[in-house]
Length: 353
Image 1 (tube, rainbow, N blue to C red):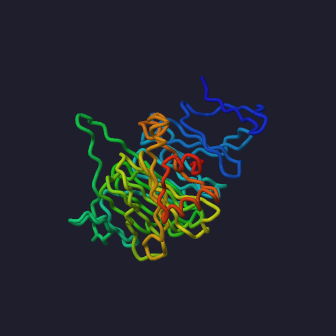
Image 2 (image 1 turned 90 degrees about the vertical axis):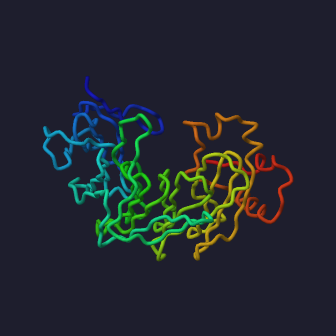
Image 3 (image 1 turned 60 degrees about the vertical axis):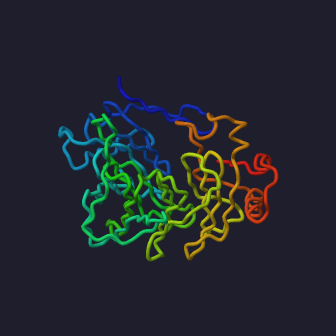
């Protein structure tokens, strides 16, 4: 049985066309941002194979990752476009990202995540925790060896491949994390096709989010017990770790940029939340915070139950957060005024995706 693609109208859901794929077991589909190209890839068991189709079903390009079609090798994990649609990033099940240029879909570079870092182009930063549990980045000497993945007790299998990959808004930078070194973030310059900065953390990286307006600012969220935000900015000499006070411990945290009419495009506003409360952090250019708002989630959690909030497999989606004018103003005003009614949040500050 062949894999078949059906193209539907987004408005009427009417079937526009259908065509068969030249695949054994297709694993995913990705439209180009302009809607002119459709990319699919084979299962890892079939080797490294990416197929590029036109919208009418014509097979335009086969890409085998530099290997022959009959040569076994590590397969494709996923493929992602940059925002402009000029570059296609193909993640394999090793430590590589293949960059394909649009139109020709030839490989222009292979980004390799090495176990030992020894780069003349990149600055390497390592997270440091002092005796008082204050966190900061310090320059790491090279060669540097990031912590490697340790399998769970009794588990002999280790996850492989590129776990996180995201382009910035302008398509000039790319951030990635490899499964083999899950606490290390690689930030690549796509003009020179070399790593610009490499950040080594104490905990594994949960998410990478570029600022929706500022293409030079990256939010890194790590699986740590401390309420902190990791930020990297191209314009600053070093990355930053900023404490975000949460009044009530409430399990794992989620972090996201905040969108609001009251937030200027260049402003950096972050929401950090757990199951019981959240904080809005307005970051200044100097690395501090102008205002921090701490509000309780407890009333909502008791009313909705665990299945609606942060239970396993159904965590709250905070990427990105969009707040209306009234919601954002009310949140900032609460920084100086005590909130008497814990249900005030439920009536006025609803997070919308």
